[in-house]
Length: 359
Ligand code: NAD
Image (cartoon, rainbow, N blue to C red; front, side, top):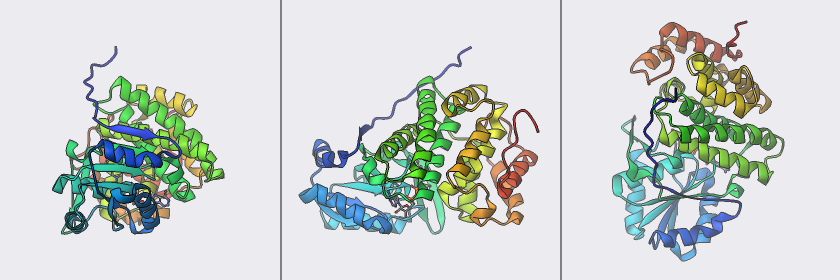
C-alpha cells in the first residue's frame, strides 16, 4: 500500500540556465535590495569580483573569507562590513562554504540571502545552517536562512576541478539516495531524487572526459538542484551521520568522504529499502545492485574509493563506530556496532560494497 505522507514545500525561487548570471541584477531588484555584499571563499575571489561587476552599483563590496564550517568570527566580520558599507543583503557565490556563510549572516543578523552555487553540494536548497564557535560546530534548521533566490548558472561551474566535480556530484547523489528511504519521504520528493540521480549519473562521466562541456555541466547542475531540494525536504540517515562523524572528528574532506561512503551505506540499507532500490535501478540503469553501480561510477570518475586514501588510520574505525551509533539518525535498517564496523572496514580498504545477492 502507498505509505501516508505530509508534504511541505519550501518558499524558494530558482533561476536556472547557462548565462543567467546576467539576470542577477533584476533578481536583486525584485527582492527590493539596493546594495549587496558579495561573499566567496578566498580561492574564488575572482568569481566574487565577476559577480560584483555584473551587479555594478548594486554591489556594496566583496568579502572573500568564506571557510568550511563557518567560523562565527567570519560571520560577525561580514555583519560589521555590511553595516559599514550600508549593505541590505548578501549574495553568496561558491560552494557549501560560501552559502553557509550567507546563511549564518541571515540567521544571526537577519540579512536576506541570494545564492549563486558553483558546486553540487546543495546547501542553497536547505534550511540547515552551521556555525563554529570556540571549536564547536552547532547546526540547526531555520527557514530564515533559506536563500530568497538561487541563481544556477552552469557557466560558473566550468572551472570546478575534475576531482571536485566527481566527488561533489556523488555528494549530491547521496542526498537523493537517503531522501528515497527517509522517514519523511514523499512521492514528489522521491521523483526529484530519482531524476537527480539519473541526471548526475549521466553527466558526471561526460564532465570527467571534458570539464568544459557546457551541456554536461548544465545537466549536472540540474541534478544537483534536485538532489539539494531532496536534502532540504527530508531527514537524512546513516550515510550522513557517518560522513558528519568522519568530517567532524577526523577532519576528512566533505565531498570525498561522501563519495567513499555512499556505495557502502546504500548496500547497508538495500535490503530494508525496496522502493528506494527500485527507484535507483531505474535512475542508474543498474539491476540488481545500485550500490555496486555507484562504486563503479566513482572508479570510472577517478574519485577516491577508500577512507585510507583520504588519510584515515585504520585504528580510528572503533571510535567512529561508537560515535556513529550514539544518537543514531533514523535509518531503514537497525544501526548496530557490528554491522557499522563491517561497513567502515570495507570502506576504509576500498573494497566493493557487499552484493545483495551474496558473494
Ligand atoms: P566548498 O564550498 O568548501 O568548496 C570547495 C573548494 O572548491 C573551495 O576552495 C571553493 O573555493 C572551490 N570551488 C567551488 N566552486 C568552484 C568552481 N566552480 N571552480 C573552482 N573552484 C571552486 O565545498 P562544498 O563541497 O561545496 O561544500 C562543503 C561545505 O558545505 C561543508 O562545510 C558542508 O558541511 C556544507 N554543506 C552544508 C549543507 C547544508 O544544507 N547546510 C549542505 C551541503 C554542504
